[in-house]
Length: 126
Image (tube, rainbow, N blue to C red; front, side, top):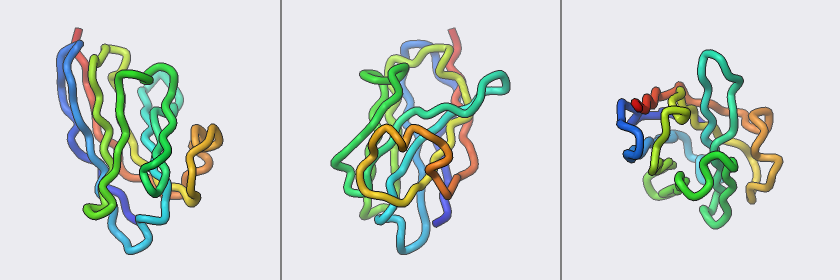
């Protein structure tokens, strides 16, 4: 599966942004999907994951209650709605795909994911 992230940009603190990840390939629907982020001074960190059906989600504590992951399997697209953005959310955001059904805590590890898209930069100004 090939992944293409988009929608990043510059937003003020407290604002909202939605980023998308379009997938190609007939097997997209069989993959759990995740979002990770990375800055030049931090390792890649888990943000959110969603099961292949969309019925199960998992979030990092730092974004819980502010970010929402969703997917539209008819459009082969996964979304990350980001609200109440903070300067510390500034990062390059990557989408990824992993085999599997539900998204338990194991899906917070980047090593579970076998497919990665290019990143999209989100900058939150203070």
